[in-house]
Amino acid sequence: MNILFFGPNGSGKGTQGTILKDKYNIAHIESGGIFRENIKGGTDLGKKAKEYIDKGDLVPDEITIPMVLDRLQQDDCKNGWLLDGFPRNKVQAEKLHASLEEADMKLNFVIEMLLDRQIAKNRIMGRRLCENNNNHPNNIFIDAIKPNGDKCQACGGSLSARDDDQDEAAIDKRHSIYYDTDTGTLASAYYFKDLAHKDGSIKYFTLAGEKDLNSVTQELISNL
Image (cartoon, rainbow, N blue to C red; front, side, top):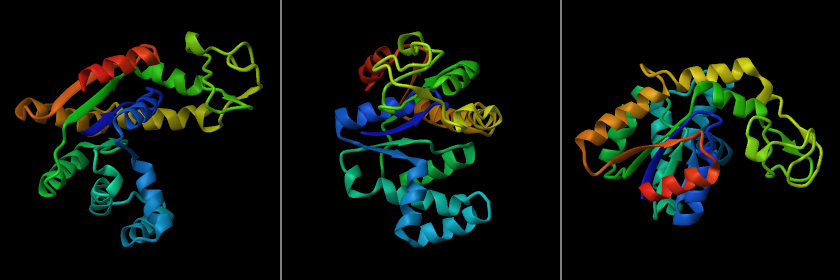
């Protein structure tokens, strides 16, 4: 089972990806991790990517696509994979699709997590970290996991906010790329949506990201 997973920062797709990884024993691959692994491992592609990153430039698709494809062909992907965070634009979607076909790798599902942009932003800015366990869920904008004042709703520990979660300009910049339906990430999702209409072997479905975690998980699994 091979899956592309789209959703804005704050939608909870990372959490759902982890759930699918454990349930179906597939690899959950985040695009940022691919760069880190190649650079840390000193691969040829990693060295080339680092040259661009060190200069503050975007890594070109001619390096990124082979890096992604190589990751999808590693041993832990034999049972399937879930790719999260890539492609980020329509051109990358077209190139990834062509590369998958050339490598004879079948794409089975494309999932889009739907979430209003302002709600996604609130969820990011509302996240709080517990001093005792960062995995304790706390968010001032989500009733089910709203903290008790400035204390963790799970254990009572003190809470803090990550600096990058409070960087409104950075959040807006990331979301502007994601919600762009002409050339951005949603454009790449819609490329695969159109492809799914033409190719019955690919299933494209959406999830209502504003629902609670368990409801989203049930809806997700029922569609697979």
